[in-house]
Image (cartoon, rainbow, N blue to C red):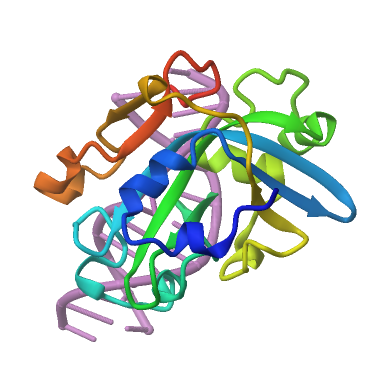
Length: 195
DNA sequence: TAGAGGATTGAT
DNA sequence: TCAATCCTCTAC
């Protein structure tokens, strides 16, 4: 079952980041489906410095963060990697959840081909890697997540005790906000990004 | 319009 | 520990 817009348009981005663990993200490109279970996420809000939209600063890049929840925010990081976020909350409340790691479910062969490797190990364990494995790039920026080529589905049930909350990665510049425990992952899951 | 740097990754 | 790599943002 596809996750509906109302799920993403709720106010609490941290809660949504937690609840996304266990759900499935899928793409269909040239008729070929690849998908994976979300095992690691991070929350971002206009209220804190780690966020591109901190203090409601809108730029050409982060414009879609100000749209209604349920669309994709994809941007290029370090000139090399596409990072995939799900925009949440109502319009003009710029919040999003970064998807950091997946556990492959469907289309493994195609993922291996895209990653130019023969081992499934760690193939989607990292925000830059999972976009490449699923074929997500900036052409998906602003796309509605209920469409036929990029969507979120219900997945596995996750127990609260299996969710670990820690600080986010790569936002040292955010000062005190870098200490927020807004990164979530499934305990003991082999597909979580290393760090 | 130039210059700096980044929500990363993989090799050394 | 460091380079790859290029787009975005800021300041001039």
